Length: 166
Image 1 (cartoon, helix red, strand yellow):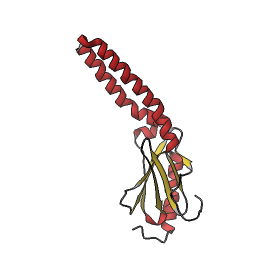
Image 2 (tube, rainbow, N blue to C red):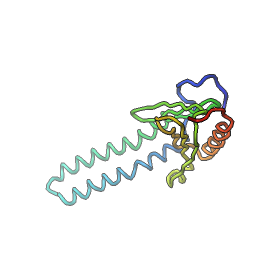
Image 3 (cartoon, helix red, strand yellow):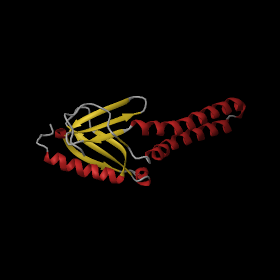
Image 4 (cartoon, rainbow, N blue to C red):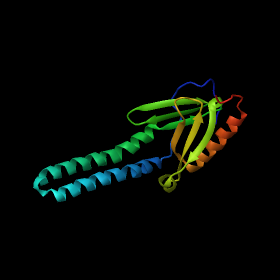
């Protein structure tokens, strides 16, 4: 963490872990496999419209491949985070992008979460709960070691903050 001047809404400096690309791809894959399986079952049970089924299956497959290739790369380039002695900065989104800033003095809790897919990729998610009506700030797909350091650092800085987190 570094000390900076007064917090302002700006692009955060740190990218999420590069392994997030594989993680997001794996998370998106089951939905496309289910949709493809439904298409195939529909085709098997309705052979009278084989051409239509083939066209729909090709379109679904092309969209799935495009999504599985483009979405993770795009998210990796957009999702960013940063912490300073004064604030936590995040940038998230895909089509709709959001930047948030939470002053350290407003932090109430700092949590780390890892699901089964995150464990496979050695990733973790950090949730910073604040007194904001906008809800908590979530930093997804961090390297596990970086997430643990972040939780430790934020906990230490928050304890030293003179704010009342309200």
